[in-house]
Each structure stands twice: as structure tokens, then as C-alpha cells.
Image 1 (tube, rainbow, N blue to C red):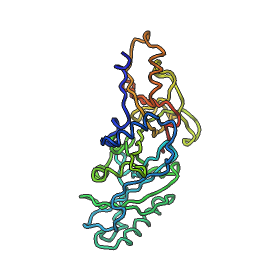
Image 2 (cartoon, one colour; image 1 turned 30 degrees about the vertical axis):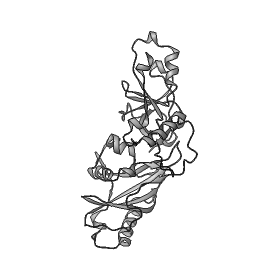
Image 3 (tube, rainbow, N blue to C red; image 1 turned 180 degrees about the horizontal axis):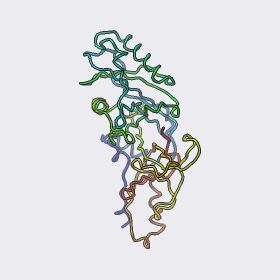
Image 4 (cartoon, rainbow, N blue to C red; image 1 turned 180 degrees about the vertical axis):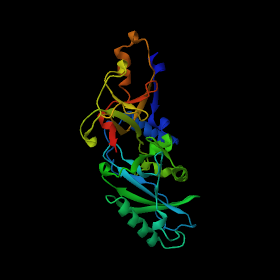
Length: 311
């Protein structure tokens, strides 16, 4: 039976960030039935759970200082949160570290104004195009972490930095080819609520996944686009995204990093005997907003407005 070949999976059961509480699940089910084809009316209304947001900045012990900068993008179907990470090495990303030469003081021994002043002065020199405001702080066993809300033109970001999604941090444990420094993992284990956004009524917004698209467009990166294509004959033309970052086929190939809202996701099981494929099977997949193709290592999204280009 066709139903045995397709496993209906809501995004909440795939993304570990989603809540398991019954009430939240019912609300998410209702939203997924409607599909992500139209944005929530209150898309610009969200709550960010920032550690120690309402408490005065004060570190109890002396440790190295890291800077966590986040931003919320709202131009998609739903708002989603990003975190600015520094490419500390060719293989690893971390929060932004305050250089020892700029911090000849002990964070636990001086006032909050001096800490903020030193951090802001450093950020202005390191990221001159960044607009930022103080948001909160956290102390982990190894680091003192100060949190800022920031906004910057995504296309103008310094190549030494990258905006990371909650999905990459929590589920993939890496951003593109970069591994996460253990400081990031420890911080978000202690502050998992900071990884998701909520509505004013305390409902959790869907957190987007990340896929990749190989493009041969010759235009500027910001003008590149995704296109429908036929890879799995049974499904016809769709928007196909790689699950993992593919290798460049040539110097003319560009790899686009894509955020997408999965909505109601189905599982595609390959049927090698294409003689038995018919329109009924194809129509059944249309009921899903996205499809997980394990054998092809691809995601499929049904609607163009489910995706946003990341830089």
C-alpha cells in the first residue's frame, strides 16, 4: 500500500528543538495542517529567551570572555534566530573571543559599564558594519559570555564570520564544513530555550532546517536563485536541496546555503520499478510541504516561499 511507503512526519518529530508537551504538539499539528503556504499574521511578534536578560551584568568568577551575538530574521514564513560565530580556525567556529590585549582587567572584579565599553569598542573595530545592543549574559564552567542583539547586512558580513542557525548548532553540530567549539555546545546545553522563538502566547515557532543548492548562475551571489528540476521521476519537477554541503564540481559552481521551513514533511521511499508509478502516487506527495529523500540525500520543498538564502 502507498500509505506504507510514505511516513508522515511533522517537523516537530524531526527537529529535536521542538517541544514534546501535548498542548504545544496540538498547536503545532494545527499549524502544520494549514501548511506553511501563508505566513502567520503575527510573524513579527516573537519572544527571545535570553539568559539573564533582566539581571544586572555581573560575573561571579574570573574567566575568559566570549561574545555571543544573535539576530532574528523576519522576512520568511516565520521568524527565526541566527548566531554570529567566528571562524577560529580552518576547521572550527566559536563565539567571538575578546583578545587578551583588549581586556587587561578581570571581568569579575570590575563594573558592568567597563565590561560593556570594552566589548563595544572591540566590536566596532572588528565588525564596523554591525549595529548591536546589550541583551544578557551567562557564566559557564569555562567562560564568561556576554550577549548582544545585532543586525548587519548579511551580504556584507566579514568572511571570518558566519551566521549559524539553531538547527545547525543543535542537530548538525557543525556549520557547513566547520565543527563547533565545545564552548558553544556547553552554552546551549545550559540555555536551550535561547535556541527557539516563541509567540506572545508562548507557542514555539517552527525552527527551519538547512539545505544546500548547487548553482551555475553567473550573477552576483545575492542574486542567485533555486530552480525546479527533475531528479526523482516519480515526483516530477521540485525544488531539490542537498542535505549536506556538496563538493564544488568546478570553479564556476557556487554552493548556496538555504534555510527552509519544512512544515508537514513526508518520507520518500524509492520504488525501483517505475512501471508501477502512477499519478495517484505523485498526487499523494502533493499533500506534504516538504519531502525527505534519504536514498538521494536530498530535501524537497514544494513551495518557493519556504526558503531563504543564507550568506
